Length: 208
Image (cartoon, rainbow, N blue to C red; front, side, top):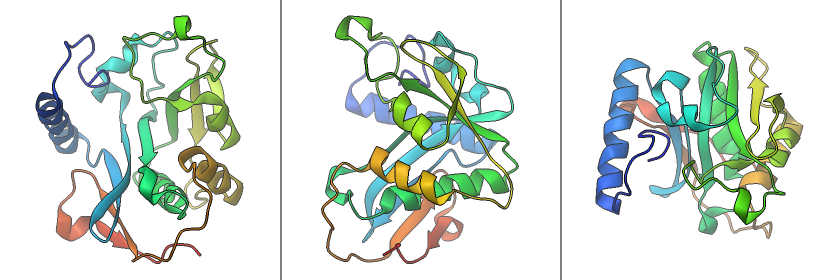
């Protein structure tokens, strides 16, 4: 809960889940959908969370804060291990970029973590779900506030352009560790977090 409740005391799983639900509900009411979930056979397979910087008070704790007011902060993105290697990372991020572009968002920003960090350089008070800065750069993010530990990076969105092929490929490497081809599975569903189920599920065939 470091993103949503800065400086909060440790919470157990039930408390953290409740606080996260409260946060998502608040963002949904004031701003709209705050993320996307990929499901396969109605099972959650991955997710991405994002929100305007004003809704993420924990971001202020980073040495490279604040997030640009015209950007949305990507706080985390993940594909669950058992579903990796199926192209779902590309599917998920395509949905994120398409959705935010259609909503008129100008850019996505994130706080990365440098791979060269020593254990003693890691700040335990900051969120531990950060994306590697090197991979963020590889997929098209650029540094807007460099830092030896926690740089802030930005990806410009342009209406009608969408996620470039080379970015998709790099994101697959970022969010997918297992590269052995997986067996065919049912069509994935892309769900906007905080949206009504009847209007939230977007289906299309998974890229082969």
